Amino acid sequence: MAAPPRLITLNIGSQTIGLAEFRIIHGRLVLVNYRFHDTPLDPETGQRRDAQAALHETAVALREMMSEMHIHRASVNYAVPAQSVFARFVKLPGLEAEKIDKIISFEAQQNVPFPLDQVVWDYQVVGGGMGEQIQVVIVAIKRDLLDEINNVVEETGLRTSIVGVASMALYNAFCYNYTDLNGCSMLVDIGARTTNVLFIESGRIFLRSVPLGGSTITAAIAREFNEPFAAAEARRKRDGFVALGGAAEPADPDIGRVSKTVRSTMTRLHAELMRSITHYGAQQQGKRPARIFLCGGAAGIPNMCEFFHEKFELPIEFFNPLQKVTVSASVRETAHSAHLFGELVGLALR
Image (cartoon, rainbow, N blue to C red; front, side):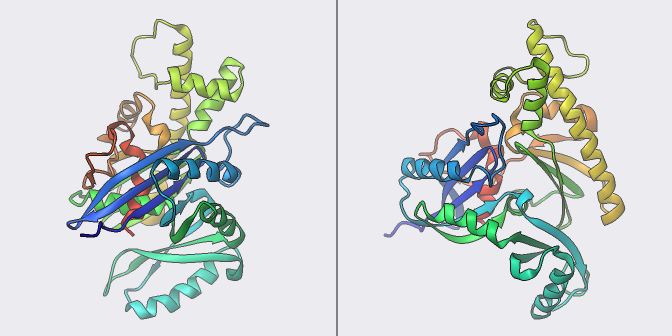
């Protein structure tokens, strides 16, 4: 009997590249293999680069991961970073599907801040239906940027099947894994350069990006210790945790300085998240979140859940995109990296 076809998914982040192989077995999504690979710092500045600037390293890392996973030529669904994409949410009256296309074309012309012949754009209905107002997200990316990314992906031997946006892949994974939640959920994806905030409520979504992330913490540590970015990043990974209010000071004063620096940056992020909640309520008539889920590379810093629980006084947990995904027995431990799988799972669901 022939093996089920491979579903290869790829997430291109500014710090971490993720590659996964799934199969559909007996109607269930099964994770068969995966790899994560950190991209190197810019050799000239020592700083963390955005995903576009690190495309050469992306190709090198991708070939290495493909070799380890025995992937030579295959179709791939991949995600581009949310900060590379223009996204706009629009509300429309409930219509038949064939009429939506015509209206969306007009809305794209009005909302996308570039001539449509210079971009690749698409849309997804994310709420509502016949007889009621529907919510649609229009996404667009500059054509030359997408061509650049796509060339890097395809020169490794992969063939592009679907191109998605990282934040929408997260949304798909969330809806697949959490089907019985009431009220509003806030999904906070803390990446290297950007934190993407998703409000998910009654089949609709609202997205906001905040220019704070793991690299912001590293830069603050570099200033605190007057050391290069690379040394500060190593210090953050070795000693970093979020200082909690009223907790005992660490025995090592340098570790204490690191933890307070991390807390200071996360306090700034908390303020931005509060602004996002206010904006969501005022502009989208959304409810206040009933719970918060954390994901992304920087979400794994120790005490992150406890810090946000202290600040928001809401249930805080890590987003588990593998909750309803079967993990093959041959796959190595995923418990400590489950919060990194959101985009990869969401892309497999396309």
